[in-house]
Image (cartoon, rainbow, N blue to C red; front, side):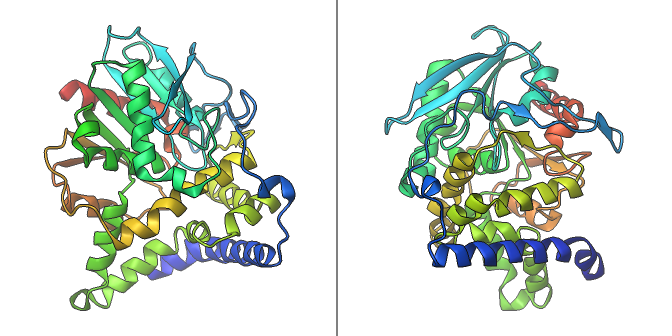
Length: 364
């Protein structure tokens, strides 16, 4: 296992570590352009609404690129703190079919779901959200505006406007999955969700419990090896938590370069026009939540949850299976299903992903 780990991930780790050191140095000496030192503003319409050009096929997987493949209707909901949250609707009219609410992760906008939407729009009413700090939604400058509580309020604002009176199927990729777990921890938001689909995205509480368990004396030495195995997969993530690093790294393009490097390793597409403002603002979601929730988890086990499906990518370079399955300790009723692809496999293999979602909804 360690031999494979070194061969596959050490080069990425070295490259990412160099990026973090460079950006930390830039931040220390104040070498951050004024344009990024100022509060981030929402990008111009359409700046994050497409995926970059890519080969039509790689490893037998068809890419979904370009603008929305089906008609989309744009709407805006106002969250409790006044932040405008953009969302886009597709497929069946409200109230005529089950509603899917799609929430993307980092670094993405709602466009990452376009391939899945094309497969499911004929059967569902689909609501696709730009999270705060991304796409056409508001980009608050204060890190405290990106706590899980604020993100939960964004979800309520959108579903109360786009799917009033309904229970929806929530589909969360990457950080969107983290948001989904937190929605299940609160009765007000949990009651809005009929089914929950996550893409290998453990919650902060699951992070906390896993780290505590795997670092206990009785789990050694394999516990620490598992922790090291997981942490080395996401070296750029830790840079988010260092003051000044996100600002400097997006200014010089190092974080974006690291993400593109991982995309190339996985033969996966990147969104075109993803802005520095989005990269910086969305990094604040980690800064606002990670440390506090790891040190002070809000729950140890979720209760009274709806059916949960974890879609586990067979080639996910960011999360190993031990870590992904740790969520079962807090929510044993999780169903795991695998699909071919990497971390962004929802964009490269949308037919398979959509089939899993459709089958799960049909069963429940």
